[in-house]
Amino acid sequence: MMKFLFFIEKYLAAKFVLILGFTLRIKVLKKPPKEKVIYSFWHRNIMPLLFSRKFEKVVVLISSSKDGELVAGPCRVLGFKTARGSSTRDGIKAMKEMVKLSQKHSIAITPDGPKGPREEIKDGLLYLAYLTKLPIIPVAVDIQKELVFNSWDRFRLPVPFSRVNISYGEPIHVNSKEEIENKLIEVQKAMEELARENSLK
Image (tube, rainbow, N blue to C red; front, side, top):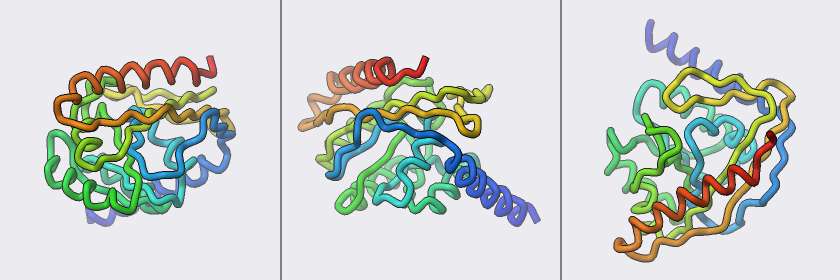
């Protein structure tokens, strides 16, 4: 019975994302690249990004938790592949899967997930860029009218018909393990600066 109820919950979550997404007025200020990359965006911004990039060849890294499954459902409905795992659970397995899938797909990752600290990058993103040889593309999202949840990430849910700005930053390459510490700082600063440029406030 619990499995059936959870299936219904996932189904409703997917339908909700689709219906809400069609009402949003999304404007992409800086376009994404056409080649394979690693998209880096904060955990709280996942909802409008899912809809704006629907049915593209992108693999989304999602936590193995029950909450993660609620995100995985809408991702699959919108045409994304998913890799399950995080820095705290099944991380090595997920990393290997993403390296394999990166041969044909771009990757989307929330470097502050699955439990924070909010808007602070962990080094897993940089190791993934080094292993896959794909550049990191910072992504910024801002929402005109939103509901902000009382969760660790302050999850953002756009109000129907709200304006949404999305910007994609310049590529950042990680060519060696020795670069990881400095590149982490570079990506953090790039994401913060892009967020300021992309602001609707």
